[in-house]
Amino acid sequence: MRTRTAGEPPAPAALARLVPAASWLPHYQRSWLTGDAVAGFTIWGLLIPEMIAYASLAGLPPQAGLYTLLASLVLYALFGTSRQLVVAGTSASAILVFSAVTALKPANPAAYATLAAGMIIFTGLIFIVAGLLRLGFITAFLSRPVMVGFVFGLAIFVTVSQLPKLFGVKKGPGGTIHQFVYLIGHLGDTSLATFAVGAVALVLLFALERYLPRVPGGLVVLVLAIVISAGFGLSGHGVEVVGKIPTGLPSVSWPHVTVSQLWVLLPSAGGMMLVIFSEALGAGQTFADKHGYQLHNSQEMIALGLANLGSGVLGGLACGGSLSQTAVNDGAGARSELSPIIAAALSLVTVIALTPLFTDLPEAVLAALIIHAVSHLMRVGEMRRFYRLVPREFWLGVLTLAGVIVLDVLPGLLLGVATSLVLLIYRSSRPQISILGADRSMPGAFEDIRRQPDAVPVPGVLIVRPDATLFYANAQLVRDAVEHAVAASPGQVHVVVLDLDANDDLDITSTEQLEKLTDHLHARHIAFGIAHMHDPALQVARRSGLLAKIGPGNVFETTPAAVAWGQARMAEHGQEQQVKPAAEPPEGTAGG
Image 1 (cartoon, rainbow, N blue to C red):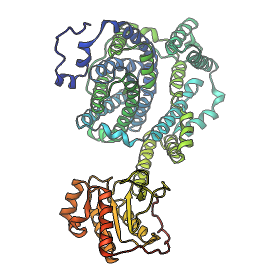
Image 2 (spheres, one colour):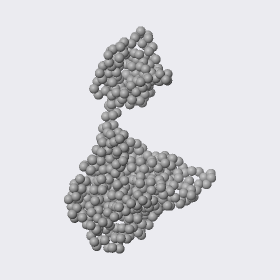
Image 3 (cartoon, rainbow, N blue to C red):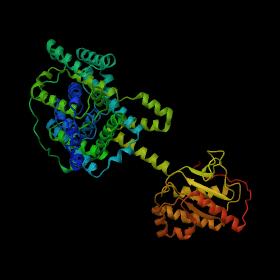
């Protein structure tokens, strides 16, 4: 790599937008090479055993995991905007592929591989289209508790699915609960040799992680397992091994998947896209914040789409960004996306020359590697924090977790997303309503009198502010709240001022409810004015006739101006405050 010389023009802006690597490659510094090389070797050592394990988890042959690295590492490095993110196969995406493809009941392993490749390519295409349409905001609808509950449920789902390999018994039928019950009932069939190999591997993985965190534990366990298995002939003692892995480069092929099969896979592909993007964006943003640069969400979608598209045509796994893999990359000294490119080059050497070394790898060790990897997704501490902070969000996470275990992977995710959207709509439709008073310490400022005891109500003028956008789902409630506030006021109300600062626009339902509110107030000889009606909302009010009904002179840019109008109007009409008893609030009215 060369450094950019003085006076040399930077990469054209258009090229840098299409291929973000063009923005950092010309500025690459030779001093970064050592850190990138060390990080490349480190993540290669981490990824090789993980990819073989995740291939097994996805129901694909071991080489599929290795083929993934040839595409995903390089394509994301060229098209992604993170400098540290490592994009490779993940446990979540592997189990999503397995869950979706097995539901189609493929006739044989070749048909299974074709459907898996079709789903991965389809996911990549969805990513690319979403990126081109700039839909990077969509993960905002996946709340943190839903995602934590989902991956926690996935971790349990995966662990239960791998326990039969660890014990050397046949896998049971049905979902997670049925499989676990079946395993308990067949513990008497345990292969002691298989269990000993798997248990020792699992203990060693956790021990190395705790006491020697800088050592690539997965690679160490992988090498030891292969050496011991080959040396002692474990396959002759009832221990299942991986067997021969083909050597050589993968072929590039486009899978033949029917339209009807694609339609069945569509919901799973869409769900997998959301999961992959949320996971990758969370990992990428963590290190972007740490190193002081910005990610571009839509470009991230395109980069992840190309990575999955490339992996799919090579017969690899679905891929995404992993926080643990990225943390290892950053901790090893990576300065740019050259480190995963180096790891991809080492993976190429592995595919061409080193696959025979994995023939004697015990399946129980693969199960141990998977269980160890997904154990980090069982975020008990984070779930406790949710319960302590906002219990209802904790239960949302628990509902998603339970859905994954009881219903299956995709239905569990959909259940969590649907429930969170229902809660979002419910909360949006019931906004807090603030009754404002004058702030003694700051002339011209107004505060909620129920939150700020020092705020002083303006005699005869009721100032109401919805603390959320007024729209069709909450317009009736806001109208009811204003009418109730008038009825409940201890003094005679002569003027109502509605502060719409939260609104940039109005919809038809909202204008109709405001018209009804205006009629209600005018029938009681109460003047009605609106503060902070922004121009788009004002245009709708004018076209709908709402402005004419309120009166063009009764709409104000600021709350102080509206209050001054109300006081002047009261003085003009000689209106004085009269005290009357407060009414009970109507059922369902939101308070401040």
